[in-house]
Image 1 (tube, rainbow over the protein chains, first blue to last red):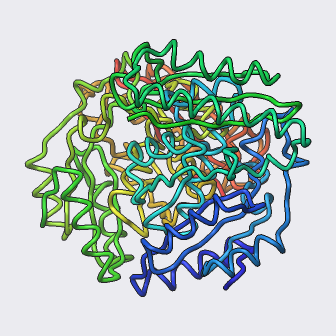
Image 2: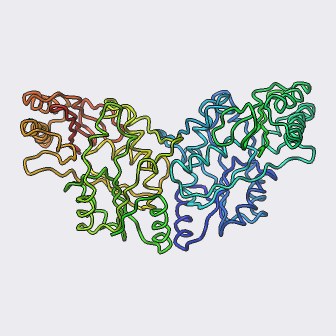
Image 3: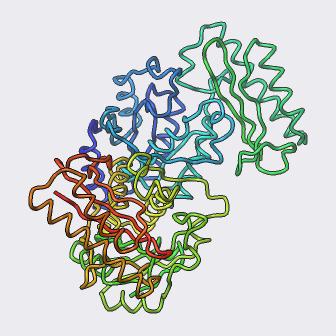
Length: 279
Length: 279
């Protein structure tokens, strides 16, 4: 497995692979890998000849009061996990190589990004779309795999790819959970045992909402209420619990088309997100 | 020569050429081709295996009170000129195919775009960078040729390519002039004979400034004054006459590094631009 630390190294590998007409898949990550990331790698392997995992804690997608500095990092462990999963190359650039001091070009999705995490985290998705397009260009990938845990991100990337005619197939991969239901996230590391226990109320609420949907409930109010009540009862602070049209990310009063039920809530200082696609 | 009118057609041709490892060059234009455009084609041919000329009057780069509707168009003539110049494919899409009704993703360069034409034409360069990135992606080009007549545009595209790691080599081609000095532009068609005569004051002023520069003058004031006086004496209305750092497009008081002397002025209702690189 190759470790690529510079722009020149990944450009050179890309050129070599492209000249041999190899199909390249990219799995963009911020590292501190868990089973969710590895599930993306397995999907990527099945759809390509070569898999690149990027590990980059992207400063541009963190707000000034967010957790950029303390975001968990363990490159040695990430490297080992990638090698075991059969990854062909890990791209692990420095922030100063990804963003020149006078960097001035941004990719801005200005519709789907306005709501949910985009409303709570101004500038976040501008950072995401910009770095993802950079990673697409650097890797020369034909396919890229995104987890549904970051559902809004995946939908925004799909929109960007359509709008800018990016020659990359975007694959959405299932959300992966702990056995007790908690959605896998590198940020789960921040949780105290009591907070982690409380955080289970998120997935519990989501499962109940999904059950209601399967039983035929389509009105937003009862679908959202069960999630809100579950989280509040467990002492969580809700950022949003929302039912959205999957295409437009506009609120739905009734889930009469493919919908996304999305949640963000704090337990202690830790902001967690979770969701379910109702379709 | 192939005429590609749909996204599917250009994607299919791109895939075929890329699978054969052919080097593709793109010359993006708004059509109504003149000798300036054709000089770009010749440069593109010399640097590639296949040349695509795009002809697209991009609505996104016109302001609400600009000349989108009356911008000159003559596709049959353009097609013939391209065929004669040895172009391999012309991409001639409909605006509705380039921009979905819910298009929401933009490429925004927010430093070099703030001045000169960017100050006079808000949103113009956002439209340019967005469509150019789309055309790069659709064409699969490895090289793209831009004329120095649109100097700010060329510098912004070069910045975008650097910032977003776009795998395209950007080539700047010399500005082409009429025998009497007028910079070639599709918009010259708008000029009455008297306006066209007055418009010669732009290039005349620029040549005098360049002469002063060659003679050793480096202060901005005398370099700019000769251009301003030439245009004003001919009855032109100056939008800007400016001396800028080529890298940052910030104003220079002294041309002590690679500089751009750039002009925009109205003759009648027609806005013309011209420039010289002082280096």
